Length: 98
Image 1 (cartoon, helix red, strand yellow):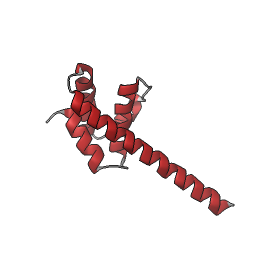
Image 2 (cartoon, rainbow, N blue to C red):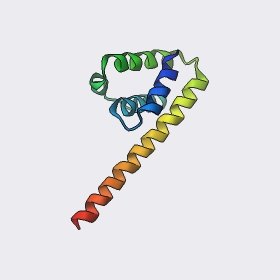
Image 3 (cartoon, rainbow, N blue to C red):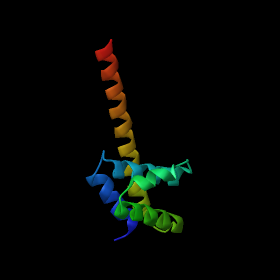
């Protein structure tokens, strides 16, 4: 199984958990040439770290257009959901404090 497909499955199955968040941010950074803290990779367990390395290797090859598109779309959805959840939490905290 290709790393991009494995990453997609991990992000789908572990949405909201640190490994999925880190991998989705990595994918977005690879696609947009945005900065990514490599130190975030060190918080992954051994298998997820190796998966991240494999994702970068496959991404560099740039041959898996369909897999990349599906993984990128999912990563953007997860990132938006996490941002919305953080915003909701902030609003709730402000409402409770006020």
